[in-house]
Length: 370
Image 1 (cartoon, rainbow, N blue to C red):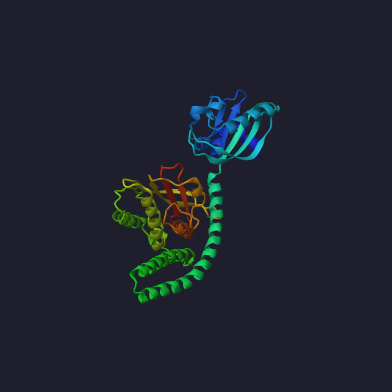
Image 2: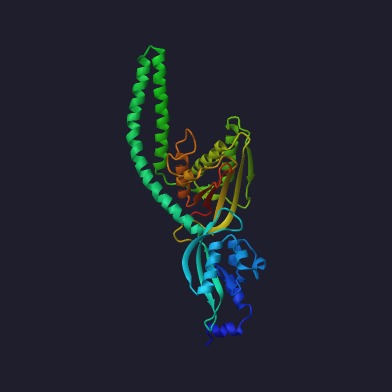
């Protein structure tokens, strides 16, 4: 009978190299002199650094942007302590935007019990954290929708009565000055009614009508529309479409509403000579939101503008009705957009790291709806 130890003895000398290459967790091993002696493929992907650039180099040079992990490796070497199930930020190169990783640091102990170095096991869990945020947001929006549904129905009926009364009053008045006041009343009622209609659209339940849909005519039609109605702005649209994207199963009307909201937001955010870049691509990923976490071919539509960006405090509340950066906005557009993406079993992500540096909106939609 061949046990694992027998296999290792008789197998290729590259057994350990193949073993560490096969691991999905990043593995970094430092020796007693705190020099890197192992840096597997997953670690290369997490850090963005090739193993040939780090093997034999001092640990603090390799982790100069990740001092927390460096310090734990040093402590583990000197004390023999293990540090398990930690979460920390990981900086890829000199990037200002870290992502969250799960971290385990243990001493590297040989058969005689001597400490020969220290080992770090690092897993990128940023996507998992994003999933958790998406789930929390979905639950929050669900509660908001229930509240909005009740409000919309309670407000709409008396609103119609007020509008009718104002119109009758205007008809009876002979004083032009007083008529102006009733015109203001009617105008504001129409504006409130539009908000109520938006709330009702947010809460109105209709099952998506999935059919084979080509995303490009939808995007092109919206771009053409926005170029013609951008109120004096000379906006440049740049399109980078992936020709390999096939027609997808989707509700074309809902997607039109979704991308009209998002592209119009980008148009309103940029200056009169602004630029908007629309990119599409296909990749395989764990489609976020699927409970079974099955790998699925996913379409990404990215809308990037060079506008004023979004304030950090607003970013925390995005997709919530009545949270908006627009002076006359209701904040319902993004809430409705989130619901449409949810209906297509996808997810939407907005990145706006610095003021005046623009915004990136990413919409992920599975190519095959199951």
